[in-house]
View 1 (cartoon, each protein chain N blue to C red):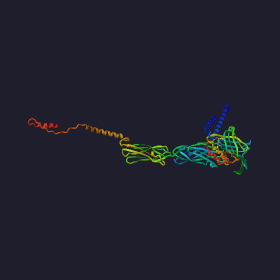
View 2: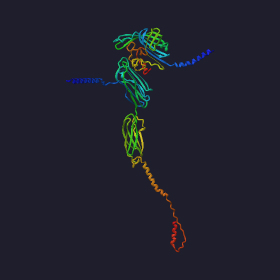
View 3: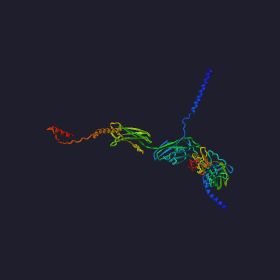
View 4: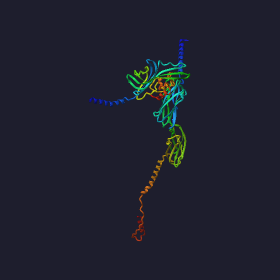
Length: 336
Length: 243
């Protein structure tokens, strides 16, 4: 084997050896399944009803050797009040604890602390640090802000951790008819879910002539914030002016009901598919009067004939025995 | 006659001016100091000194010390032992001043001094003790003086040798009282915050008494020689405070 080949082989061998070392190091350096200690509000999103209470837990995950904890939780004081703070089971399930909290409902925050007692090891794992009970004062939404959090180990060292806030909003049931368009054959009703729940409800349409006959009813399900347009086919019984009404039935706990009904007025003309027949009516009326005028007005303008009067005039006619001349004269007088 | 008129004028002027100065000087000033005892009667000693109060109004001062060096950790298993120390507390502050007579802090008043002995009997998982309290000085006049720009302190009470040491932590502020309970922090020293680190530091010594590992005079806020719920509550009341 030539020297050149031997050098090439050695070079390749060194290269692959180096590559293998890199791969090995890379494989060793990968840290699979690492986790971060986290304090978080649970549930992350809370839904409440005015004048009722709800609770959230302040939980912890993936902590090692926790001896004491402290946190502040803030909220919109206009919307919510805290009525109670209770110690969770995470530390006290291990040993005796000292738990304390302060509530400031004016500023909208609480400060809570808890520590194990005595020369005892800290607690490892996941669990609930505290439970906070809120009272809903008014409608609204806000962040449940977890801040100034501190975790201390049994060696009095701080424990690095992350925090996750919560969110609150007030439960609302509200559906609305937001648009209504009707023709001689179809009625389009647009409904919208303006609340915070998925709703299933009926939408009905009516027309008013002498009574309010029901045109039709459809049942729909809308996700919160969604809207859709429903089409109702109908046949007006006769031409004329109709008041069309669309109603979305009141869903349970709905208070805003003014927008559940929508009413419009349409005009139906059978010869003209266009619901706006007022123009045609005016044209017909104009032609009628024009014809009438051409007949009546000239008659009014013609001169009146004088009445025929009978006048007998006797006159002398000197033609001897000319009866015919006498008779002609009489006729002439009558004509004049 | 002219001199009398002049004196009267000066007197009236001072009566008008004095209230102004009195108004300006009426601001409340609060102080706090924590220190370690290093000497008793000129000999090595160990212990703790703590004081807080309002200048010109009132003060609380507690000093506890024992001759020699701090005891070594007990044997395993620990055997019966006794633990003796001196404790002095200011019962009536007569003068409380800042920057007075060359001192950063000057407190004079009446002191009680006791010689306290805990005789421990160690059981398998616990201990019991017999407590003996002997009065050494009752209502004795004495002073606590801090000097050297808040570097060292000296306690001189008639009837006992002088106690001295170094200042660990101090604070002077106006308008608001300094909250009690700041004895630790992230770095293990007072950090001007009352928080979970102070609570944990005290809680770890829960149930201990002088001589038992974990007990510290600095966390015995009511000076009853037991770390208990009262000491935790003292911190709890001030949690969240910053000074």
